[in-house]
Image: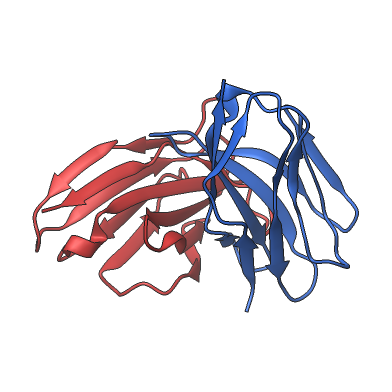
Length: 113
Length: 112
């Protein structure tokens, strides 16, 4: 089975722009979670989608949003980028029960200049 | 709230040394516990997991036992290799819809 894939792998943007990141889960997985990883804050949960519905949300501003499509692929969007948004963004997929094991993609490295 | 605390790194060991990375957690109820590993430039890989008290997770020579009485899930390996050099994350998940809570990570460096 193919693993979780994320595109693009690297992005460079400037402040004020917006960005969309994509995540394709493992076949058969219906849940996708997103995380932000930074040296200072570590790994922080952004949100989780299951069957096209946001099921859980972390403590991030409204500039961070996401969605999930009927094929379980997910996108996250960050609007009005700030320097502090520079991070590795990881998505993870699971079968869908709240405590199921999550499998991670390689991440998208976002740099905001 | 729920949280995970790991021992601070970096941890530097010689090849074939014994490894312990401490992890303790705070959670209501009975979370599932995980260890993930991250190699440079990569995402997180699941190393092992345990879903209930006294369960032992194991994989690739690594082991961890879910200890409810001490709220701990320490990672151990009897003989580390240079290829084990990576950052290790302890994490828990409770009934919160796909939200993993991570420790701060422990960097391991194994020297030949």
